[in-house]
Image 1 (cartoon, rainbow, N blue to C red):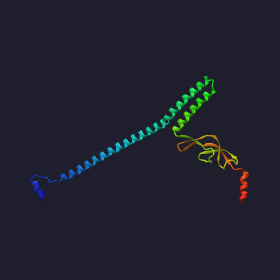
Image 2 (image 1 turned 120 degrees about the vertical axis):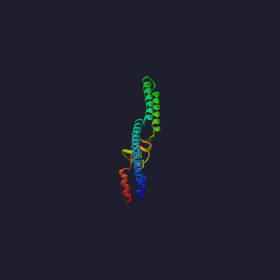
Image 3 (image 1 turned 90 degrees about the vertical axis):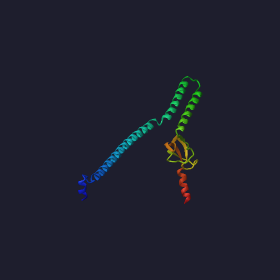
Image 4 (image 1 turned 180 degrees about the vertical axis):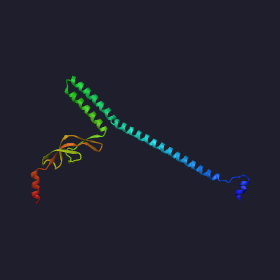
Length: 185
């Protein structure tokens, strides 16, 4: 009946509004999906650029990490060349020795600035993490397992041993250890 009245007055029923609402919602959902896809693509591209930039920076850091050390080493090299030049024309060996000692002090100073330290160990107990035993000498003069001589110095870089000290270690004589075992019985 209502439809008849609407037809008489040439008024169509309001069915288009519901259809129109659905298409507006579909369009807004499609727009939202498109925006999210766009954001996702941009984010992916940004991440890819970040990864590439990080890799480049890491490579540059690896390449140039020793730049300060190398600058110092070039100074040492220059001083060795000067010392060698002076040694060729010098009559006095004492001045040559002094010059080489100065260059050595400069070299050690540069290493220390970079965190390299010489391991001092003579008279200490043997530590396999810091020392490498080259020889064992039987003696009563030192306690067992004590370092009595250094063959080659060792070095640490900050807290890491980069070269162990090569040492001679004291060892109780075989006869003493047998006597002490017999006396304990």
